[in-house]
Image (cartoon, rainbow, N blue to C red; front, side, top):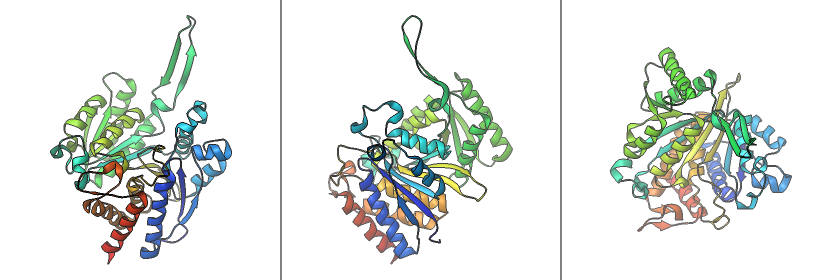
Length: 370
């Protein structure tokens, strides 16, 4: 790894700066102990950018994001900016990054760590050993389709409009990524839609099936209506390996899968674009949790989801599987040793601060490589 690999860190709002501070420490550890060097730059997004520049994402920051090899983001939003117009809210900065970087696939793993089985609201035998990946289409569908808006009808009623729309190419590229991921996991993909009531769902099922027949017959493919998929995630989540679905259903199903593991504070995510002519794939990595403004600045935040997002960056942007494995193992071991931030605290464990969790993680990394 040469030092010209470029990262942009966007800490954002609330607990974002705190958790990304621990990520910076881990990056520094890999630089010092594994000769894994990056050129790292930091900038503003979300509410922090609004306060400094009046917009949730500046053109200059977007240009940096487009130029680097990967972006690491903390969290955006908070009640401070709730009264702003919709188009100026902090979350629009994140949506703009996803859209302009063409990050069409969101990878949301749901992994239940052995030490946290009891934190889930489901029975231990249902979630123990859980390891699934939800691949959500991220730049199309209901959230971006036109027409959209709120209008006043002739009779005085108001009507809200959103359009669910997908093209062949949008469906095939996210399905292809799901099939490729499955080949490196347990080789099964479940495609979720609503082909029974939605034409976009019919197209989705047809195009995923066609791509499977053309290029991925070695991968086991099944189809499931999204509402049934939601039920099955609670009933028997370990039947799934990779789930691929559209933007709206992916938003819902990935949050449901996240809570099977016991805490949003433990879950990372990756948003990936296509591979360009140089072989580079634009990518943004972020924890699933929000900005948690109620605990911001108090040293209570759990940094592990952000750290695990860094591990995903090593794996998917730089093909550094051994470093990703090392970091993930360190997280598992720290949890097994009983270290807990408040969100995952259970009886008999030791509650630690954000920085103390970072200390424990770095110490475990040292122990693992000695």
